[in-house]
Image 1 (tube, one colour):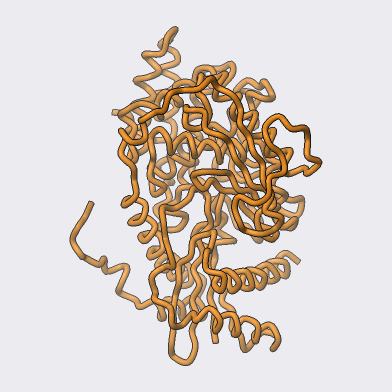
Image 2 (cartoon, each protein chain N blue to C red):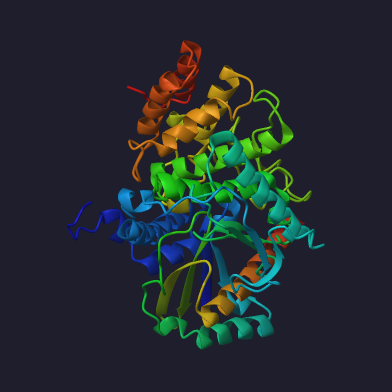
Length: 110
Length: 357
């Protein structure tokens, strides 16, 4: 499974470094982290959701927007989400992915 | 608005799965192009949703019977969760709560209310005595602050990139400023009108800070979010209104991309069409005008910008040039107006490459 997370709107200001897509190849992650992400993808029924956003309303000034893509076994789905994310399963998945991104950034700074 | 069901070739020439493959395996330039293409879709979805719910001017102008102006602040805490409004920690008139973020929000909302009332006789965000609510400690190490149309929401920051978002008075003023703009011009949060919306929030945020510090235009730092970035980050704030594009250059955040002139306007579908990027152009125009006029920026330049955003000619789709023309016109009509002020405003727009007719 491959998961890509990007942030086309980074909030109160536009930071190109935070907007950049991050590709997570689950096969390259520690097994327990990969299993956690896979379980969250499954719980969110990500690949079976319609491609339209869950509920995109008028953009709130300075709110962040997240794009998540999951690819597995020839299937693929992209969801465009605006914060705050109402769906608990999607929120949990995005939260977990953001932790991964945060860890990668810390490595980058080091 | 276009009603034809035409799909632009840029949007459909490459299927999304191929773009994502490029993201994973392409060269740096290919990855950047694929990223831009993927960003288009979410931006267009936002645009459609926004235009559908735009309110009419007459609806926004309707007013209830006005009450005497008075602050009505309520600060809540989400305690690290995302449920709004959360638990009330400090209501109007109560003493400090001991929660630094809650007390900073309380003070910041108070300064913002006082500024608009004393500088422009505006009774709160909607000029109708709207209660000011805020929620602090939103989310887990949440790196943002936003205005949701009803309240301000502040994260604590992750401590790695950002400090708590209440620590910066101009950020508080910026968020509430969105409420003012939404109430008056209703500028759509997209492309040039969105960048103008962002710039106006920066203007109010910076002016509130200057008003509290009693700084003249030449003494102001014109930085938005000074102190918001941690010491680990190579930057002085989120934006420089005076010198757009110079606020940060950091391995994680990247380089500040704000232009200060129309020749460098960034055409992008990221960031709702570059609202936080191209706002650098009108931001610089305001600092140039305010500095040329001199004195306290909120008194003359701020007054011109405030009257402009309330002017009927400024609507939800107003672009930089239209707004510039209105500011020049208003500069010439203000009581006590001087030719030098009109020239200062016109020259400011000229210096950033915005045509004024």
